[in-house]
Image (tube, rainbow, N blue to C red; front, side, top):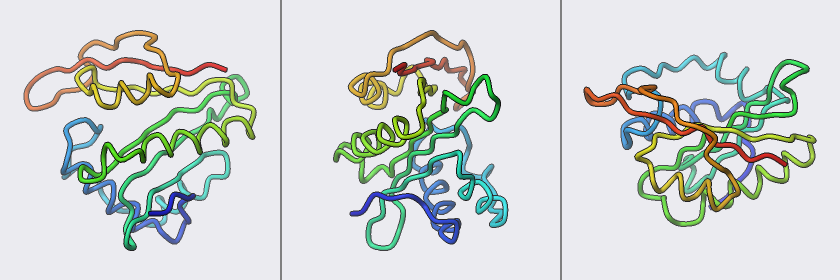
Length: 161
């Protein structure tokens, strides 16, 4: 397994990973049928030099990713919004921790002061990972997701340097 930045020419591989994760978990934002491939747009997103997209590659496919999208305005450039997803069969193998190690390096190199994310309150595996990485719960967003006919709350979590 290799963890590295995703190249723009790997847009389809990245999309396939997202679709697989959407099918395997209820904890991501999109339902499996809501994600549509637009290669040009995906390449544009992956090519944004302000942002950070890394993936775990295994046997020619992407089995997990972490993205950090940096604030676009002067007042928010010091922060980044984090999204992470790992295929079900590859969870609890240390991939998430390795992603956060690489994220930490990137954040320091780019003088970031704040990393933030949201996570469903029932996603205890992810919450524990984030806490181990130094993230703290800053608040609760009520009824932010509607999953299987039920409203679900999310925690807002952040790591401040």
